[in-house]
Amino acid sequence: MASENNGKHQVVVVGSGFGGLFSTKSLKRSDVEVTMVAKTTHHLFQPLLYQVATGILSQGEIAPPTREVLAGQKNAQVLLGTVTDVDLEARTVRHHVLGRETVTHYDTLIVAAGASQSYFGNDHFAEFAPGMKSIDDALELRGRIFGAFEMAENAAARGEPTDHLMTFVVVGAGPTGVEMAGQIAEMAHKTLRKDFRSIDTRKARIILLDAAPQVLPPFGAKLGAKAKRELEKIGVEVQLGAMVVAMDERGLEVKDKDGTTRRIDSVAKVWAAGVQANPLSKTLSEQSGAPLDRAGRISVNPDLTLPGYPEVFVLGDMISLDNLPGVAQVAIQGAKYAAKEIDNRLKNKAPQPPFKYFDKGSMAIISKFRAVASVGKLKLNGSLAWLMWLAVHLIYLTGFKNRISALLSWAITFIGNDRSERTVTEQQIFARLALEKIEGTTRLVSAPGEFDAAMEAKRAELEEKAAEETRLTDQGKRGVHVDA
Ligand SMILES: Cc1cc2nc3c(=O)[nH]c(=O)nc-3n(C[C@H](O)[C@H](O)[C@H](O)COP(=O)(O)OP(=O)(O)OC[C@H]3O[C@@H](n4cnc5c(N)ncnc54)[C@H](O)[C@@H]3O)c2cc1C
Image (cartoon, rainbow, N blue to C red; front, side, top):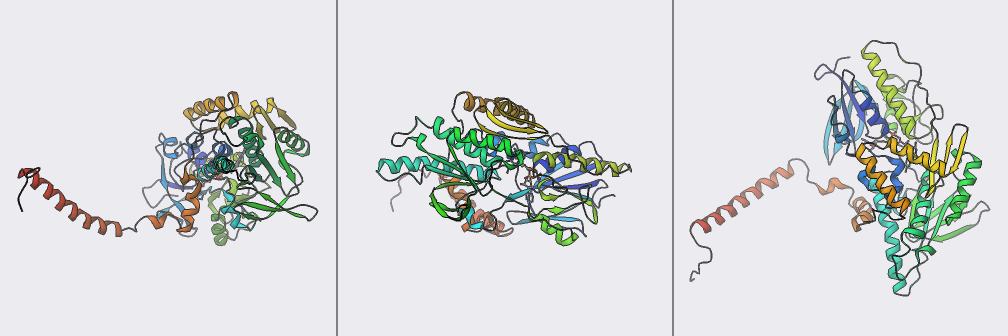
C-alpha cells in the first residue's frame, strides 16, 4: 500500500464539503498523507445559504477557509482545483485551476464532489432563476432580491407599474424553498417596510410553487400541511400542483394540474427544485461500470466503495445506496466510516460491517421563532422546533468564531427584525452571466508562458523608465528650465 512518492499512504479527497472535510479531519491520526482538492477555497455550510441570500448572515459566517480549518492538521494539504478526470487504472486525479493542470497520484481516493442544481432538462431557466448551491448563487440572489425592490422604487417614482418587480417566485417547496420564501416574506413585511418612499414593501407578493401536491414531502403529510399554514400566515402564497413550463427575464409560465397555463410576472425568481449529482459520478461510472440513477448518483457497495475499486470511496450527495437522502448527515457519517475503513486497512484490521446511516431528523425554519422538525416519530412545529433548529445549527457550524458571529447576526434579525448583510453590488447580480458569455474565467488570464514573455518586455520598459528618472534627479534637471 505504499505510495510512489514518499512512502506514506496517499489519500486524495475530492471536495471540501461535508464529505470531504469530515473524511479529511477523521484521518488526522492515521498514518497517511491527505491531499484535498476542491474547487473552492472554503467549506460551505449549504443549509444556511438562504440566510446569506436574504441578508441575515455574511458569506464568511457559513464558509470558513478550508485551509484555516485544517491548519492544525499536519498530515493534510489543500489544493485549489476543479477535478476534471479520474483515471481509475493509473490511480490519478487530474485537476485544473485557471487553465493550469495538475495530476495527483493516490493510493486511496475519496470522491465527495456533491451535487448541482437540476432544472429538469430546462437548463436555460438558470439564466433567469439562479439555484442555491454556492456562495456565488446566494450573493447573486441577494443582489437580485434587494435589487428588485430598488428597481420597484424607481419605477414607482416614475409612475410606472411595479407588480413584476414586487412579485418574488420561489420554485420548489422543499426545505430550501420553504426557508427562502419565508425569509423573503419577513424581509418585505418587516425589515424593509420603513426604508422606501414610493413603494410599500408589505404589498410584495411572495409565491412558493411546486409541481408536487404538498409542501416539505420528506416531513410527512401532517407537518407539511402545518408548514403550509404557517407560510400562508406570514403572507406567502403557496401554489401546489403547479409546474413551471417556461421562463424569461420578466416572468414565468406555470401549468396547473387541470391543464391550464398561466403567466406570473416576476423579475426575481429562485430555483430551489431538484438536484443532479456531480458529473464526476459519470466519469467513475464509465470506467467502473457502476450504474447511475436518474439523478446521476452512482451505485456504490455497502462499504461505500466503487464496485471493482476497493481503493475508491464515494460519499454524500453523489451516491445511490439504500434510498439514502441527500442530506449533510449522510455525507458526514459516510466520511467517518470511510476514514475508519482506510485506517483499519493500514493496520490490517478486519473490515467494518456495511455502512449504516443513523437518521438524526430534519428541520426547516419558516419564520421568526417558527420551524418544523421531524426527528424519528417526534414531529414538532412552532417555537420548540425553532429552538432545536438554533441549537443544531450552532453545533454544526464550523469554527468557534463563526458560531459567535452567526449568533450575533441571528440576534439582530430575530430579535430586532434587521439584517446586517444587505450590501449588494452590480457584479454580484451580473458576474455569473457575464462570465458565461466570455466562456469562463480562464479567458481572463494568460496561458502559462505567455505571461512570462509579456512580463520580460514590460521589464525592459520599466528599467529604461527608472534609469531616466534617476538620471533626471542625479543631474539636478528637475524644475530647471532649459531653453530649446
Ligand atoms: C440550499 C441547501 C440547503 C440544504 N439544507 C440542508 C439541511 O437543512 N439539512 C441537511 O442535512 N442537508 C441540507 N442540504 C444538503 C446538504 O448540504 C448536502 O447533502 C451535503 O452538502 C452533501 O455533502 P457532500 O460532501 O456530498 O457535498 P457538498 O457539501 O456539496 O460538497 C461538495 C464539494 O465538492 C466540491 N466540488 C464539486 N465539484 C468538484 C470538482 N469537480 N473538483 C473539485 N471539487 C469539486 C465543491 O466545491 C464542494 O466543496 C442542503 C443543501 C442545499 C444546497
